[in-house]
Amino acid sequence: MSVPSHAPATTPTTFPTLRVALEEWIEGQVRVGDLRESTAKAYRSRLRVWAYPKVGDLPVDQVTREQLGACIRAIREAGMSGSIVRGIRNPLRKFYESLVETRVLSVNPAADLRYFVGRSKAPAHTSSQFFTQAEGPRLLEAMRALHPRWATFVLTGLLGGLRWGEIAAPHVTDLDFEKGRIHVQRTISGRTIKPPKNNRTRHVVMSPALAKALRGQIESMSLEASVKNWTTEQRQLVFPTAIAGGPLKYTYFVAKVWKPTLSRARLPYRRFHATRHSFATWLLSDGADIRFVQAQLGHASISMTSDTYGHLQADRHEHVVSRLDKYVG
Image (cartoon, rainbow, N blue to C red; front, side, top):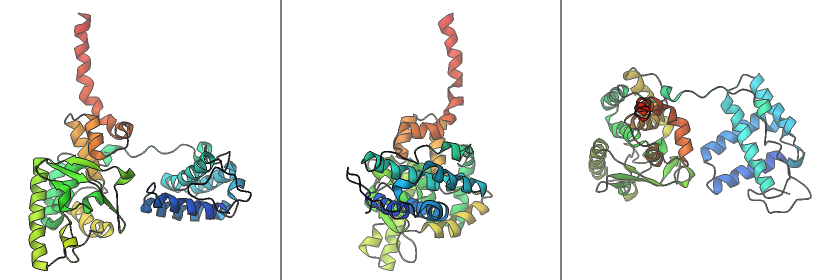
């Protein structure tokens, strides 16, 4: 008997194996939009290597905390990264949580695996993941020299804070120049166009420089569409590719555009996501309220923004302490 992604509140008499039930659950999470296909793909890959050989053929109700802990210990002893550990720990914990919540099981063997995980390495400091105010112009200068077609694409990350897939997906009608904002309502994940992360659509304010660049982008693409006789579907994209007129592919962009540009600018390698970190860092450094930054980034909670960028505000507030002296004469 299989355990669906939203199991009924009844206890089955027999249980499927963990391999079968967990794969079905992951597929169900993707279907309802609670899990991105790229994340699901990573989960499947890591589970097949590190979890299924040890516990995959056991019925879900017979898997123990100690057995899952042994899987994690094997990852650590092999010298693998913390992301590999999270790649099996997270889906297992959430899968068993769903079984407990729907009363299929009464115990979650993956609820507390901290003992087996041990001390995790501190995440890389945000400062190593963003471009400084001095590096931003260098990045754009190199992009305009090597790949002028994608300069505005990168600028949208730096001045809009959009994720890569959110920049690759917008339509011309998503740009409201009268109100000066971008309506972020879709993203590209692999080859699939879907709603943004956590289904959180938002309106991102355009700075004057970003608005000017996006106007120029639309004008250039409109002219190119006329010359190449593109279809209506191709014409709606803000950032179509030159040959096919379709959405840009992440692997191509990173290999052919992003890495060569960083090398030309003599900048250390950072993921494209660093443009989003730069946007948030620059805003906060210039005094923006963290709640505004949260809304622009589309974070689900203020704590997510604070946990990621809160340390950047500390120095900005230290001078306020000296003002307390007036209250004691």
